[in-house]
Length: 174
Image (cartoon, rainbow, N blue to C red):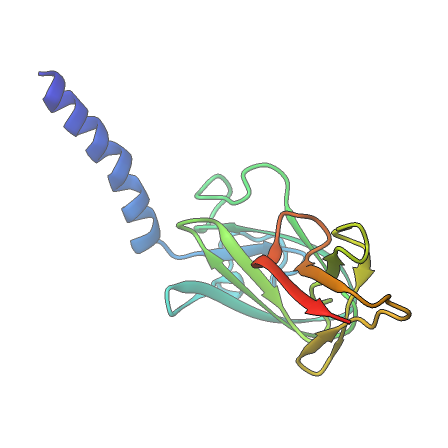
């Protein structure tokens, strides 16, 4: 009897997640959405592309809020409390993608500020936000002036140690 209950509990915990991702349509509602906060509006309906729900809207510069639903408030709403937010620096088309299986999303567009990367290493006391890098084309760089001769190690971070690349230190000599 205990084994049957354990199998039943396992099936009940697995089935809703699979059904959630496979047979629902998702919408984006909010100030970023084409039809505002209407959670089931046809204009706010997202399109399934390569396993991700996607929507594009043309917006002006400003701060926007949004969330995802499966057509109504309280229906697979993410986030369940509060809203997601994005700042747009200039008028552009903004594309939002959403994966309801893990709640990961991206917001892209020419007016969306890109990520910031920092150089941390033995030359700056391993400060993860010590030297902010600049992007030139596809290259991120930072120039260190007057670095004394010697061997140094470094990583690239997002300003914290939450994300650091590469996994092990890289070294260089001056």
